[in-house]
Image (tube, rainbow over all chains, first blue to last red; front, side, top):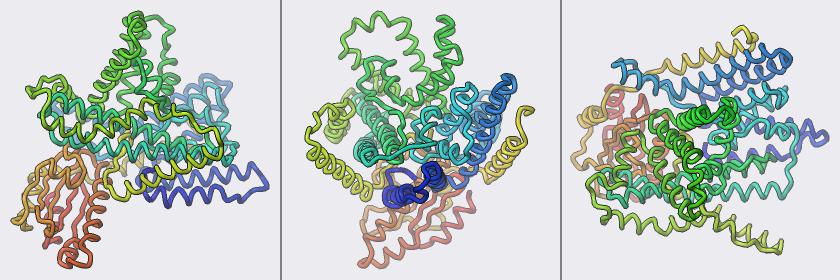
Length: 473
Length: 156
């Protein structure tokens, strides 16, 4: 089930909200929180089972295993060797499961290619959200090992942390330490709830009105054949994808954060206007913040971070960025995408640090955006060879003219949506001064968000184009 | 393994059993999309239809054909002709669900469109074939739905 579907908006969500907010154990706060956790946990499992009836079993086994691991680590808190052995077993198990489902066919295809073998690929579909919930589980296990959080003793609370439907299938990756207290006790105020509703509708609008609209242009350009396209069309295509992926994933993150707030959880923001970045480092501090934070806390710093000299720092950055690429998908184009950013970040840190500060911000911004768009070519294509074909078209190396009738046709179609989306991506809408009068502001928000919601519903009912890009990760 | 307790070992074993069952099912078919289409054309008449190019397919279904391993699509230019034949070889079996949902939605829209004034078209649409198995998706609106379905399964 996706948030931007009629079943979710008109059946699932209202039913869960009703069950969640009708007080049953109102005389006892602790009991009532436990009941709410149970409602959310069961609803989340149903939400997952809607699209993945088989793999819900895998998730339950993973929950059972890691819940017990957490308790075990806590039990051996004063025995470092034993604690470490349990942690190692858990990390190996969790990564093996992730690796098996996500990377086994990638390994088989490459072994077949390199060693002329004929191993049949496994008939496996990727369990939706496995990369996200595995990382959440690992953050819990590692934090318990480090003594930064107490082991969760209530299996429902732990299961809810892992399965929570707002962020289950596409993040943001919520670290256990960030919501440990909220699992025990949380309050939903009317203003907090309506804040959540507005954030959710904003995300829905980004996804349905922006990402879906511009995504159709990208699909059309690619379907026409990028190899035969002029450079202008190829650039326009990747610009459309640049906007699509931001509003698609950013919109979904907003919906997750909004839903979380409606249920009393405060998830950290996952995007902070990434397309306003003035350097690659700046971009990655604004894009998919929860993933960068996870790799920083659980890979980069444990590897030594920047504390062990320049060569080791470079190695650590290279490892982290290749893993970031691989996390996004089992294909060489994702590894190339990760390596591309790794190299750029290393260059920025050690070669260009002194130069960058002397360049005007506007120029740095344009250069960063061009680099980001080139990066999306690796990300959007099915394979490395497709990405190279795309890049050749962008660089006029395919023998086609820079500009042709197709370019004008597409530009005429997508110029207006692109302009609207740019205003949003650059944060212009957020800089519009808010009305000072509380009543007027409330009325305006009701009108605005009611209108966006109505438009989204009309779009969802009338259109069949509603993909979601980050599902596959 | 020595560090783990019985509960955790049971979870690990159950996971292994689960993976065994998940991977045990039938593998994706080795048949190419062209061979499958050729087999289907022997049992259904497409003389009133034409084979579509990628752009035409994309316009009809709002799906990028390059996302799949192969697509063969026959349709007609006439708005009153509802017969069509679509065979898709999936690049990844995870694509199947969204694809079949989209096709199903499209058929339902068409049934609503013809409902009440074109009973012949409506009846053909009501008997549509939609199959997803072993890496293939078949969609057909035709006069011989059972023969098409059987041929499809025989050639997987």
